[in-house]
Length: 130
Length: 271
Image (cartoon, rainbow over all chains, first blue to last red):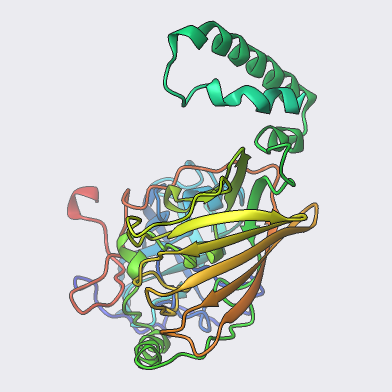
């Protein structure tokens, strides 16, 4: 966390109305994420970590100063993602992606995945809400 | 057929080897393999679940997932907390509302324990066998053992994350009493506290084929002004399989020096 510059979360995002059901509470409290201000995050996948307790998408995103910087996006567990149609090869390094993310409240470059919207220009419909 | 399968299974894998019984065990093993093969071929997952039920108990075996919110109470009701538990919980709620949770015991991969495990958003499998009902949780591979063989907890049973659970059937309802629960487990992710005096009584029954209901009554004279009752429901997922979940594999949410749940970046070697 300390190495991550703060980002003004207003920059990247349009508010999106969601109907994704009950929030996910997994092995840690998720109140660090702001579910009232989902944002659309676009960038390039640096690493797709197919791991427990959470799957992670490391990717590029806005740095808040007009440039690009690394973002960390936390998904639910491997098993729950599989039940929603994901698999270990759903994303690869270099993929261009568009995600719907609940950002960290403290403004750091990270968030919780709500939905994967688009991979390399093709619509995707992969959710991560449990 | 199931009755034949379940009667003699005490001599099967898991029991200490007994030279005189080996041919018998081998025969039974082949019988079970053959039967499982036929059931798999026959196709429906429900018939596989039946293999893990006990024909002498009402059937609640299967793979279940909690429905509704993942707070202990589905409508977010709270027990009436006595001091100092009220102040402790107020402190935790203040941190939650600020988006910086404290005392988030599971963030470091410690077990949620009872009663939190009953409301985590991952499935569990109920296995029924003579003298036992087992809850096998996907979440961190956790396990609850409910003894139906008449044993009782003793002073030698140290407080445990899942306490000590005994049960009996009242009609089609499994009544479970759990005591000797560690004082540092929580009610749910909000950090709902209790004392070492907590006793949880559960009444589990199938509302319909696809719905399991658990009425939990938490009695804790040290921490709660009166018993607190919540009713949770679980949906059957007959086509799911429990997957492996090792929390320590890549936990990037370890609690920081300030006591707040973290959100880590991968180590440089990973980049």
